[in-house]
Image (tube, rainbow, N blue to C red; front, top):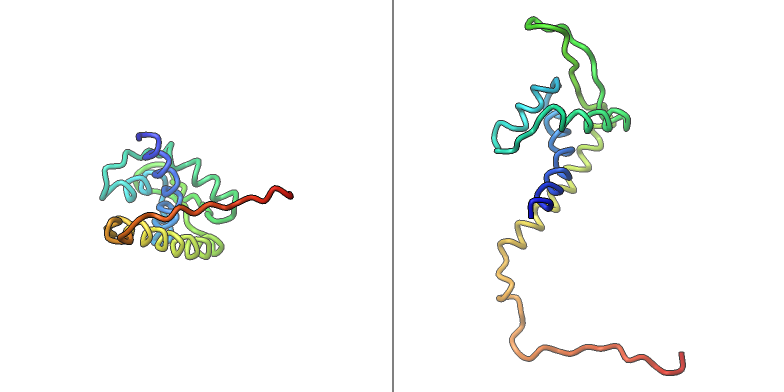
Length: 129
């Protein structure tokens, strides 16, 4: 089960990163903090940088160095206009999937099954093929 959870998180993490960047620019550590604030996921900068690099190569994320009052310059990431467009499409699809999962969870499967005997449906093959 751990592998399934890991795969699910991995699949959603890219969208979560894009969602956070859609709201505001972040440097690596601030992005980790913003994503980890309300959940118990253990994210590290090492987890998000490969995703940021891939999104950058795809032209969905851009970065720039910004001087910091608290130390060395920080590399801030933000969505490009193509990234904002992609995020709009992806979040719409995610919401459809989320609705499908929630509905499935709320549905009592036994209530939807028709009463009566099950039908046995078989395709008959002809011998002349």
